[in-house]
Length: 141
Image (cartoon, rainbow, N blue to C red):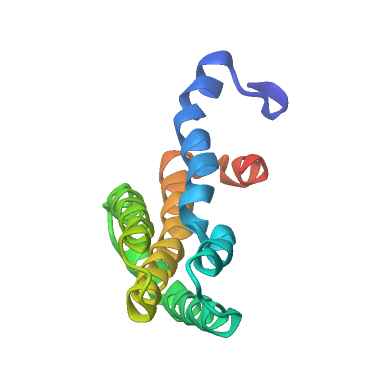
């Protein structure tokens, strides 16, 4: 349409992708903001809480570039949204079962790696579905 406006059909076609991006923000963060309070309630000291959260943060930082490269190289971008989402939910649920240091640390590593894959996967799906309108859609995301 003229002026870069979308038709009604075009607008509705992108709602699933916009909704996915909105809800995946929760998946990407996992239970990170609540983890400290949860572990404090289970008798953890603040130094150990900071350590497991730092371990997860470093793992996520190290995996961001390789995850992006892997997602760029594949045609199965939806799979890289679904699997990390399942991994994040599973890793967060494991903390409910056991609050041992290494269990929580591995859970945070898995959540961080999954979070590193979700962003590039959603961006890749946006570029595949509407490459010419990607910059306009990035403003919505």
